[in-house]
Length: 324
Image (cartoon, rainbow, N blue to C red; front, side, top):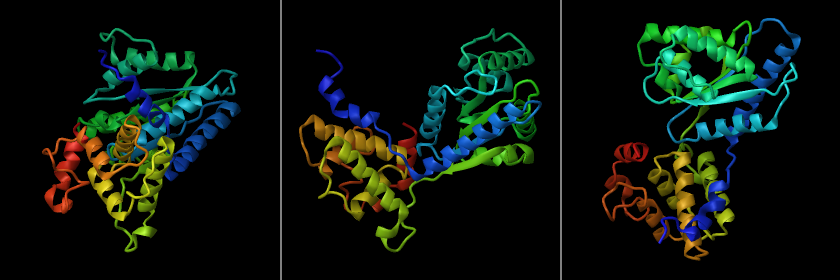
């Protein structure tokens, strides 16, 4: 007996492939296109110029990385010719844990497909980064989870910002920068006026229910409802008898107000329905799907607990969900 159940794979494949376009995606795309247009025009004019870039912030699991990566991949796949006649590219690099400028140079070279001997000096590594970017027609660098680069104190952080700024103003080959991370990243970047001016800031909010007395007029409630129905339609699952204000509030609570976690749960729940050939989803199905990825005590579930907000500590639940 194999470990991969093809029926289970087929049940969730279409759901996993799907992409839900949030209203915020339009703002991110507009800012991204503005940066590219600015770069193209300046490169066409010629001479020295400074590139612009993006600062994308938001709490964990709100979808900022997936939305930004999607744009970068779309640009790279578009094979857009720059004024020099060559196809421009943007390279993605994810940071994890505290990282020095030298480490960042080494990691960037790896992302460029050109690993270097770590015994090389910091200056040598970054000279190689600049050279490889120019040779490979890389016009931008996307550093995800960039808050990890700002961990060594104010003086070190100031130097880091100066170095980022130097990349954007590099005389021979200026680079667009995309920096994404949790909200504290914005406070680091905004401490340096010039680079804050060069980076357009897009913030991704968590789900924020309860801002309106009438839930039917709450924009996040409306968006959450639309999200559920969109994934249900993709799975050909009936949710009419399940979805009401109470269910959506429980869904929000269960997923720590994170859009990304809601989508993951919808995929699991509707995937279970398809696997079992059930055309209508129930609270029981959502509870079962939630239990697959929950560290709450057995039997305790936000979808079934009568007084769930008092029975389950919301802050601890958030911590458990994000520590997975």
